Image (cartoon, rainbow, N blue to C red; front, top):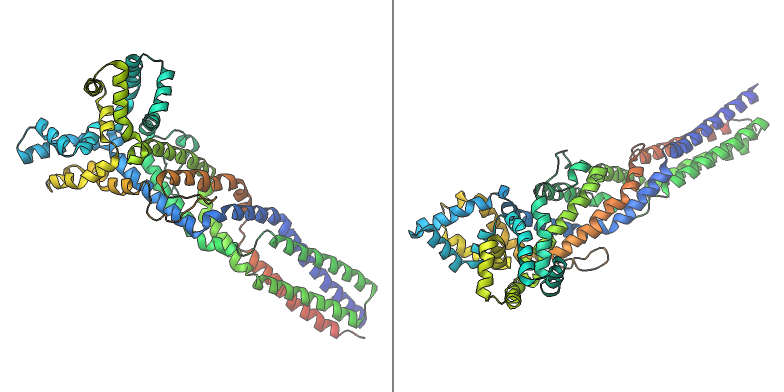
Length: 496
């Protein structure tokens, strides 16, 4: 009887070990851990370039100057921006200060600050958009060309001006209602709808970029070694435990000796010890905890509506940059093309250059004013003197134009050398120092990480959390170790 009782206890011990092995295997397969962490590794591999210190610094520097650019443009793009309504106020203050008429004040502004005065007369830019089709018709008639021939002539001789007038309608028409954002249900991380360019700027600056930057530490902890092998190791341990416990159940049914019972129980001790070392040596608990924090921090960025909205939004940003690049600095080219355009029309029509300018002034005043205002670096150069010419009491009366004045210098000065991007590169190693390069970097590198990895991200985050896996495996290892010691102790009490 004693020998039979001991044999039953030993059999029960191995049944318990078998159950533990089955639980481990069921855990790995039931939670789809192999596929999830495999897809998680794909996300990590694809996102590595985006999480370098240099890339994150470029993100911040880039979004800062794009944000400043929106602040510069918002008051002057459409009437709703408020800048155009404040122009008479400026003229009135100058007139009152110098005791002259409004017409004389405007003439004084044009003489002392020609670029700034021209910019003031051009706004809102939506008025330029309204004039462009009529200007094109005027040029087609004056030059006796077809629309296609006009475009070809502009492309051949005035590509910078053509680029600006091509993208201007997209900018002015979409400024407060970017097409497609409502359809995808785009919102910020708080659920507030994002529809306008200013709202898009706030989303990128306050939600998306900070969310990515905040996860650098967690991301770095995942790149020390890969994570896709972890569920395979756990699965193999579970399978080994199942096979070995089944073997020992059969051996116990046939009867085994004391020495063999001790040796087989010692295997359980070794397995438990291996699991413990595996978890602790590889930092499985902190790494999977970091994975969970990363998931929590970036989940809002990976929703389908936001990923689609990111693409729509960054395309709109690209249109804005394409509109502004020719006119922002002398290197953009549009400023140098303006006198050439006047001379070209003059030579083709036989009109004197002054007559061409007069015709433009009469029929397309906002468009001519824009041409006379560029490059905008010249406006920035005049602004200190413009501000000095105004009385302190004038500034509170023109808050919207004051905003444009405040943000114009950092944008124009940084357009071809964005502060904070020294040595910055895109994911392929190309330089990222200008605003156009910043736009391309976001459009071709950063946003595609979200687009291409969204499906893998969904797989990773489905079914359950992952942070519990580390502690669970450690607990299983400790239980196996302690339980194995108990089995060894019981085996030693068996009769030889």
